[in-house]
Length: 231
Image 1 (spheres, rainbow, N blue to C red):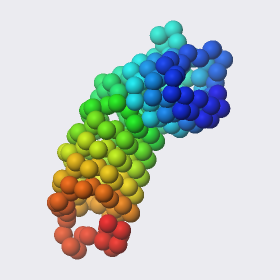
Image 2: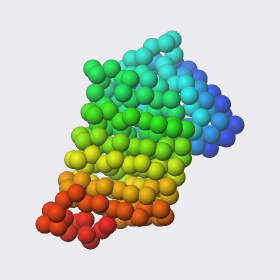
Image 3: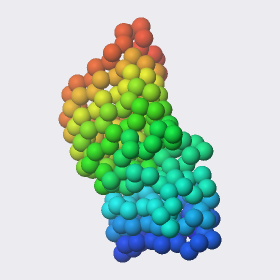
């Protein structure tokens, strides 16, 4: 299925695919607000970026025949995981990352994985190291995020426009916060930055209208030019 093939099909409610389909192109079913159920064929070999991004009502995704492992993908806890990269590539609004068995350690939350989803809460596993771009963007009902200590990188627009986010804890080993990562988080009132931070990119906390307190846990000597120049 080619990229963008069914993008913005507002009346689409379910997707079932014939066996034989091997590739889902990028953004193929993105921005389908009525889409609730997806059944993937067991012949699937490649799922490109953002295939189901910004579909807020998906609550059922899996493989045909009840299979949970197909080629390099597994479907568990309302997610799709690429086991070759230890990467969650999609999660619906009822996803539970911590319910994924430990033999599949999640290290990356992928590009737009939860972007625009209907999630109200999420617990990020301690094994996660990278939160990619747009991973949680426009999750309007998400109110609290705890970023664990193993995370080193928060990608650009990762939490952009999470307008309900009022509580944020950033792990002690985060070094990079990408541009617009928390922009338009209009309920955010305070942020504590760990001393591990070396780069805060442009507009990382732009338009956070209620943000009144920013605390840096390091010393002035530990505050790198990259922080002061771009923050």
